[in-house]
Image (tube, rainbow, N blue to C red; front, side):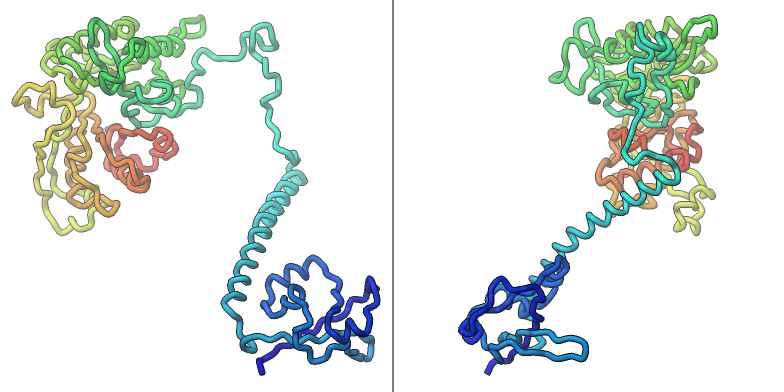
Length: 479
């Protein structure tokens, strides 16, 4: 005989839709359905399978202990029950199907309860905010408040804008917009995020300078003047208004920091001397208005725009004029490596070097940024703040692959030596081709470079770079 379990169900107190006949009760065809509430359905999902068969498969073949209703007496009240016996495989045991159904029931319940709880919580917070602070229960904005204010012929006519409000609320950050011409909006997108450096690849074809990554991407209207020179002139004219209130001449593009220069890195892709002469010619609009940083033979006079030549930029032609130059060179960072004894700044990140007395010399010979236009045997002493501005290098060629998501001690020594040498020459170190993925590795490299004092971060993800607070990583950023 199979093991059995009993299910005792109280009869409904509501009147039955019809009175069962004795034959229905005797044969087991009739079983009254008790009254149900919403929580009974929830509990049914969480009860064993054996207790639900009664509602799903009531038929005359179920074995009954008694097919007649039994009466149960109590001192307070009497209730009628139907006792049914349901065969199960093993008393107290739960089959795999029952377990699976129970898990499904819990998941269904969670899918309902969790969103409802979250909505209730937000509703409660919103209500508290309204009661204590008077905030509206629905989200409101003031975008519809006088939408035509400042427009011609409307209220506030002529009061809608300031002359210098293009970069209003933009905080400049030491980030270089790598291949800036690839942005959806070249130049302006970089300024929107506060980048203090932009890059343009220029091709001298015919009598014009075209901007693009390769010749296949060039178009007639995407020229150096259209994308960079003319927009910068228009922007700087607004930042330096000639009015009865002010007569400024050398304010930069950032209203929050007028003294901050914007670096325009020109990567010359075609023949160096010819391209260099054409770039100098097209910079005349910025030069004539005094917007360019220049070297006067003894000192470098800062300006709103600092032009730096890289790629095929000819170093000898760039430095030929010893009394005036407004294009600076992008020096090869690997040539400036400066070994140094152990210092406290080294031991902060490199505890394994505390027992050493000196860092091994390292002078990589791989080609780096700015070497294409260099004459043979150019000494490292030729790169200083009178001839150069950046000192750049391919990050992967400088330190190799970054394993396990962190820089090794040898890689840190290389980076420190190169940055140390750039600072000694008065230049800003810059690494390009830094890892961009995964984001955790990218941010780790950025933070290490910032902490070690790199002059400019090279970034493709401008938004990702702009959300970082680089002031807390800064050690000697502008040194």
